[in-house]
Amino acid sequence: MELIAGKMKLIRTEANYTQDRMAHVIGVSKKTLVQIEKGRVLPNWTTVVTVCALFREQEILMNLVGGDALEIAELLAREEIDHRKEKTLGGKIWWAEIKIESDIKLQRNLISKHFRIIDDEQYRLFSTFNEQEAKARFDELVQLQRDILS
Image (cartoon, rainbow, N blue to C red; front, side, top):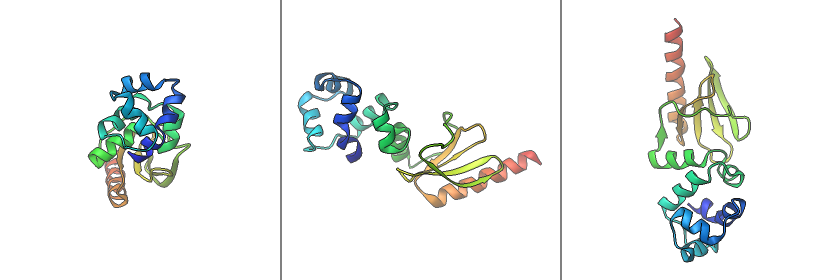
């Protein structure tokens, strides 16, 4: 929440929104938005998720969290994501590859430090902040892939 709050004015200006327009779009009063932009108050969880959802493709937000801000919000809320999700770009920018086996990759985000597992088609299979959980799930998915191919 602090990261988003600290960049709220930049997110707004990148979208070419006035304070009035931004406040209306994210569902807060202009007074509250001004307080957030000045660093006097933090946005609540609902406001942060709204900003992540509505401005997820903005460069400032993507650079702030190292990719999809809505994924980070979902990951924080659920603690892990364990189902096939949207196609990724494969980790060319914000990701370090930890392991690759059987066309499955375990990667770590260089900015947010969370882990994800993607398949050979670049679809996200699993995400978590917990390294041990990521490695265990990676091993399970690799074994499942081997069992399918045998």
